[in-house]
Image (cartoon, rainbow over all chains, first blue to last red):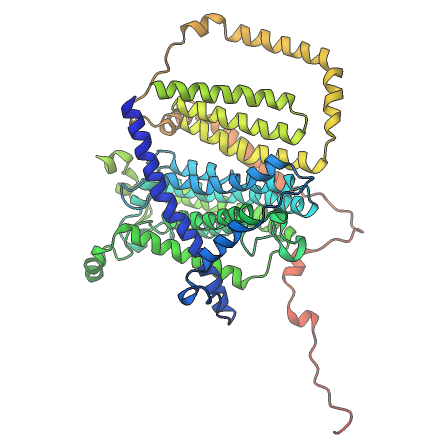
Length: 354
Length: 199
């Protein structure tokens, strides 16, 4: 009993150690986004609070914290307040299985990839409930759009995951990364290139980011599902969106770009030079690269039209994934090197552990 | 062991309470959300039985996809909350009959003797992987039914995507293909014209 409680407390400490830096990253991601989009558009971005505007996230946070919380009278009070929490919790809970480096993971479960997929599919409830509980036409429209979009792109994303688990033969995220050992050419982005592309497009759609931000659609439906939210409730929706961005970027780095593995593996001189870099730093670097790409996409592309979103999801991405899974099956059966050689495919969980 | 027992009763009570909520809540949207909660709690129960694959699939398929579409429909058609109350009594005899049938069936399958014989659940050791065990059974013993079901579902999804409603020929709709391939030269013609008056 005492032992159980000790483990529980120890786990809680680890949870805090993951969540706090994550929330800090979320805060600074908002700053980075404003800065990057600012420079892309020939502006300066926030530069008034602190040096180079570095205190801007905290200024925003305290502003939102002290703002009045407005609950519409005709709304469904409890669901209205619980919706932001339902949006944020899956984005944080998914981090339980993300390995930051070899052995550095909160919970090394065997069905890690499946857990990620299941948890990220819950994120839509926050938006759906927010849209309905607000009792507002625009909010409901945003929620409906978001639900349809998420369902459509989840299928393509699931097929992309199927490709990854075929290539690695495991659902355990740590083993998936270890299967990509051997340098930049051994990472899964080459044999799974179309699936990598499909994953990234559906990840952008799943996070409801531009150019797939029809759930918000400022110019069409005001602000979509969070039109009635103010103050801290709005801030939590905002945090959920940015936490999700970091999550999908980290997953992309883990599944397709070798996670914490160094890109200079097996390159004679560089390998020794960069030996001191901890694995965590590489993962952070790769994740940041994807985050920059997300922000860049937002600054570049106009919003997709709703019917074209559906067309892209169902008629372009899903056929690509099905086709590539067949190709992948053939290349695994013929032991195409250097990814699917017989030694590599024979590696099982026990080899890594023992 | 004690913690596990506490969690079991917590989740079991959650399943029962949310299932009761599905039936008794007035608002259809609340009922649907209560059903979601029941699914989540039963997934937690399965997780405690080390059936992680089934638990996660339950979350993924039922909570993540089926119930989202269900809520989608319930939210859009705007059911009147009172209708449910009126029909509740109206259909009571029929419902009771169905319930009796179901209860009899369950009693027939799950005889009371079964309940007494169930002791503590078997706890597998650390290396046990539910996904692997399930995969071995599916891909050896049940490989043909499994593949057949998979192909059937694939055919269904291809059919659903390709069988868009056929439009009558005189109906005016957007032709997305054509819209996407439009070039500037198709729409805009740049002319250089001489100015009429010399300034």
